[in-house]
Image (tube, rainbow, N blue to C red):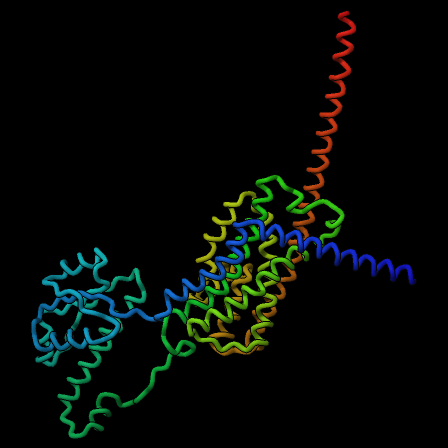
Length: 431
């Protein structure tokens, strides 16, 4: 019994020693590869800063607009003055025709056109409904929002003034009741600033973790295959006699690097740019731990499909935008077809984004994201087992390749010896 116990302890000690050896070797390989360092360190550190700085203003201001005023009346000039007074837009050009204004939009000089028809003032004086045409450049959604929303606000304000003038009221309170019988306050839930940064930054930060991990791990594997260094993929030596120690040793290297990166992306970057962050540290830690593990094992599994360094770049860059949509943040999850919802469940970023957005932006607790939390742990287990199976297959392939190389060396040695024997024999026969 004592011998079995000592043998068991010895195997555990040997396994831990081998795992540390693999971790050290993988860490050395990571540090020496400039491409891997770029995706592991440089991109996660700098890309979020550039992205957050670009959207730090949250909303578009002073969007240039062209005005076509065919009415030339007091009411049309009043509409233009109130429209230009808004901080969101700027009346940059006055045009004589709609075609002239369209040419400015085509040249990207302006982002929208305000068209006031000739009968605008006449209809107002006849107590008829007047219309103002708004043409927006839809290639930039923030510019569209500024141009259209400002026109809506100005038309509502002018309509309110006309209603007060015609009502015949005697007090301001009567005017308030006539124009707004039911008072209300508009509050943007979970995005009080109404800005684009608070909306898009949290899912992008979580997606960066997964995508850079895939790029770095895949780049390392592709480099090893290009150089035919099978021993770097799954080395065949005493330290690599167990599947678990190989997978755990490599994953420990990635986990140690990205533990700091995750804290930087999810805790520090939002606070640097004053984005909404309602995180509680225990909920954040409980969600990020399985998410990081799921991303690591998913990346290690996918890296086995990478034969060249460039392959992983094309694959991951192509997947980035679809994965952001599949997360259910920029497009409602309930409006997605069932097939696409099933595809989304394959990626750790789907559940990581949903969980983090609810924790950070909506102030949810861990119990509120229990589904995402359990899904990430399930993905961690599944991808860990699949990684072990794939690495087992690579070990078999590496050993087979090593046996073939040894056999080729033996064949070459045998042929060289045969040639050395045949040559002296031929020389003796000639003599």
